[in-house]
Amino acid sequence: MSPTPRLSKLEIRKDVLQGVVDATAGTVGEVSTIIAGAVRDVVASVGGLATELFELREAARRARGEDDE
Image (cartoon, rainbow, N blue to C red; front, top):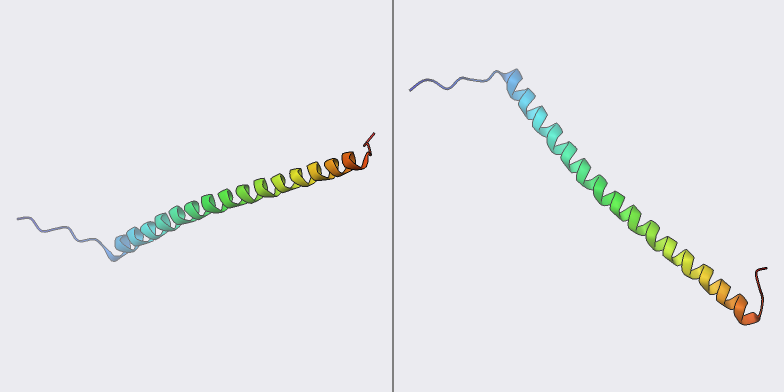
């Protein structure tokens, strides 16, 4: 049976650092995706509210017999 080659401390540290950076990058990417989705949903909700408010204002003007023109 041949002996298993040993890795130097420097190579072990490099591998650990590479693993940490890879895991961190993956997590940051996932969190960024979650945040981007949440921001998109909030903007869509606020936009929907604004549309409803404009429609309510227009309906109130029509009910009072006013016209924008």
